[in-house]
Length: 517
Image (cartoon, rainbow, N blue to C red; front, side):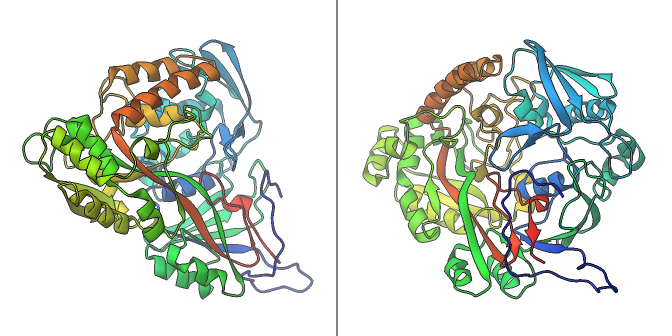
């Protein structure tokens, strides 16, 4: 069996064993994982959020693979080269099979990219101008300008089978997903379970765990109970309040790692905002700064997150292209209610009311954080009415052009290690460039930021790209179109005998796991 980075632990067994036959080895290994929510789609071009992404990467594969520590390595493409400033050539691995036995061809990649251009995920193809199959194993992709981050982007594009899509259609793909990934779908019962089985002909080698079941368990207390009673082997987002309890139980452990997920608050920048009566005060930068200063992130970290969060310095972590050394949002705008009140008075704003849209089952303690934000902002005369909902309703409700929203709490992570993908999606002026501004929920528009993103996306030099994105970061942190709150800690509970190392991108990938025999 194949592995590429995870160090597996050999601990005491906690495995569901099937019946043994005379002289046979132990039965096939099984694993059950408790997620915070069900997948919303099995079509990787129908939307993007964590629970769905976890399923996608079990069933499908990209041309370029993102490793657990966010470096990049060959995936379905065994190699690639830059022929000139804007032309890339990718060589597919020989003999890679889809789950139905068909061999992957360059035409499947072309089909996938064509379909992507017409999908909700068109932003992933924003810097792809054209593409063609040179032969059955060679794909050529042209970018509109030199673009250093193309391989990074391709790690998020999962390859579909043209023949399979023609058979089942777009609607059929939801119940009949089929790719080249390490697992095949057995059954998806919405809001109950997703069952997968290992694909024997996976090109990296058959998975060591033959049967994997993902169970959506939205209630944190129920997730903890499911772990402690043996109903599941691993739980995602163990409740902060249950960390010590699980640590003190024999046969269980808690594993944490810093998360890439940045909890952020998008502020509407339109002159007229859906939930604000009259003119929108947040158009004035002083009001946005006042709101930032009114939020006590340290109190949220201490009282709500139990210390298991890290206040956000910028929109991306220090490890990423585009991060500016020496800039810290919390030092620029420290918690200071009196200063916040002064800024409101300078702006001539004597308070206003708006609605905060937030989830109650997507981020760690999200509903409690929303309530805390309302209390903090009330101190400077901003009355926050809460509109809290399950994530299954949330994404459609806040979808651009955000006809319902003035103030949105959501999360954003950048597993590509490059701020450009985030800035192009969240801060680029809407409707100005195809594939950009697709998630600009605050309607922010700054021509200087747009130009810097354009320049970053028009160079083949990573250092030059970094320079442009850092300058965009400086402008954004001064403009405050979005208030960064904190990075979560990824918290997992597991039974002894389960070997896994949490990935930086928070994907629970069973192919990298093992269970002791």
